[in-house]
Length: 259
Image 1: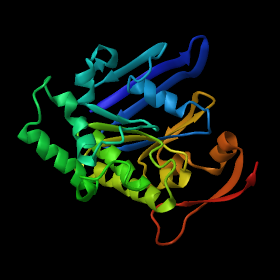
Image 2 (image 1 turned 60 degrees about the vertical axis):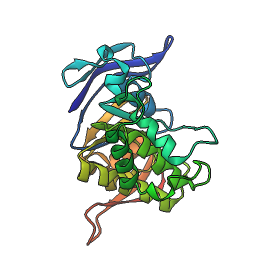
Image 3 (image 1 turned 180 degrees about the horizontal axis):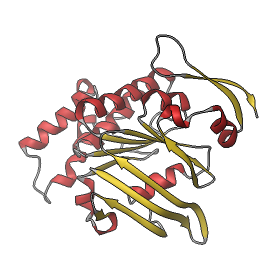
Image 4 (image 1 turned 30 degrees about the horizontal axis):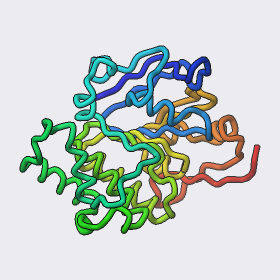
């Protein structure tokens, strides 16, 4: 499973937000999109997943134009978790997760045994099964984020898109979410595409990173190739060192000052 986005121009009315954007997404990788606030990261993710229309270019999913796919067909292939999401106050956790099965169900058909099995799998793999009968508003922020990820996983997508999945979470829940993302990719084979602000997290979990600056792709490649002192100066206006520490497989970013 792969997505090829080519020469995308994305905007609202006459205002162009992203221009000449090309990205190749593979199912076997964790791909992270980074860049400053307002650079167009979330806009790119929304266009690739057809949440918004692009003005020019193309998005091809396994050889098929994404605009030609019916909504249910697309939802059986890609799952998207936006940055902001809400549910009715009386929803129980298990009820919310069950809505992820809708792309696979016929109208008024109810849950099949397969649906029940997949709902339980999605909750067990995200560690949410034990509070399945609680209200979505009775659980912590980190637990809630795992429930929303479980809801998307219940779609059984080949590719999972997450828009800033650690926003508003404390550090322990951020790490928990990143570990879950890595586990899903490594153990279930689901491709993951994320928008992240935390560059240390991007370094730690990503296989491939795309850097966006002012609505254009600045660079892409492996984390070590992309996150460099030069990139940090050019894109974030920050001076830093990239430090390799014995016993760690991934380097760390040591910030100095504004460039």
